[in-house]
Length: 433
Image (cartoon, rainbow, N blue to C red; front, side, top):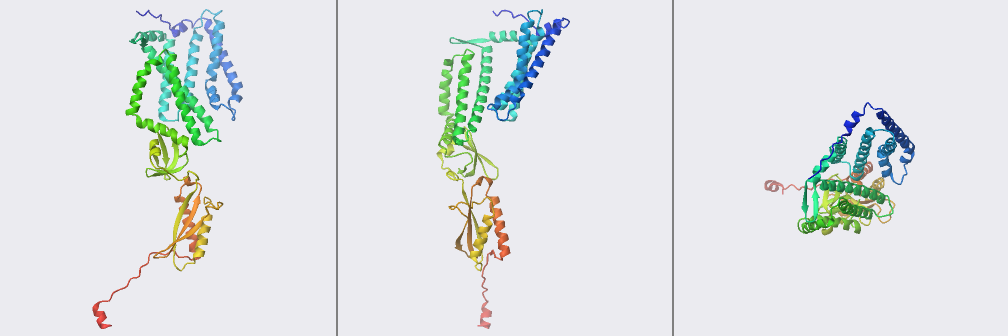
């Protein structure tokens, strides 16, 4: 039998004290707290806006929650002192959870924005968290929170030697969500610190950041459950079922996840590489836990499972060197001075800033490919270091430069020609033998 919970409405008690002189003193304490909090944030502003700060995330977070937290401390101290000579401190009792709720909302929303990428679903989470915290505050000041807590505690069931109530499950869910958000925020902070270490290989930094995220998430759940009184041994059955599920239905997901770490560690495919896999050519823009994102030169993106990069042949066009060779065929007539045509083609190639000119192993070069039916086929071969910038635009620029130089020099680019022999009729042959 659950004992009746006394009804304590802070709003009603505040209205009853509205004509009491104690209320004026409490308003003064609130005004003093707001003034002290404003002054403290004013003095701390130079330290919170330093560009070269070691912990910019902590500075940005304190700028958002500093004012309500400092004011909360002042109000708490003022309430403690005022309780010795004031008959009631209902306004201060109401202000304390209000300031705590405001600080909690700002802190959680900042943590969500810091831990997750900006997206539309993030706004839904932010609104949900804000309404949840304000709802708890509203239940507290109206005196309904203890009654709801007692009702949720009464709804319970027994599982072996463990008793589970609705309040315990709700508390566990909240603690787990908060722990996961904290773990993701810490993982994002570790990732930013690792990305700042430019001396380390990018793939290794990505692998370490993803491993840190995974470890922190697991630790968050393992620490959150015992914190609310749930024994981890009750999860043994769930762990066995999860293992069977991974072995049968989730083996592809697990394979892609492990393949992602293998790719990042062995560095056979790195972010920025130009690869061809499964008849898809593009630049590796992301290596995620489940898939790798390829961005082609026309802007389209292909999602390739990480397992494909492990089990299939991958052509990495920039594994050892980012240099890529571009060949441009040009045909000239047989009457052309080939040495002059070669010089003009090399001049057109060297006029482009993207063409490598300082590498003795990969200089621009003109090759005589073949003596074709309609003319001499030449091929201009150039090398570039930035294939991610595209090849079609460079081909067009070089072809335009060749066309202008050939036109100025009077070099003809032949078109298909055919020699046609007209056969005479038998009557013409008899008349003109």
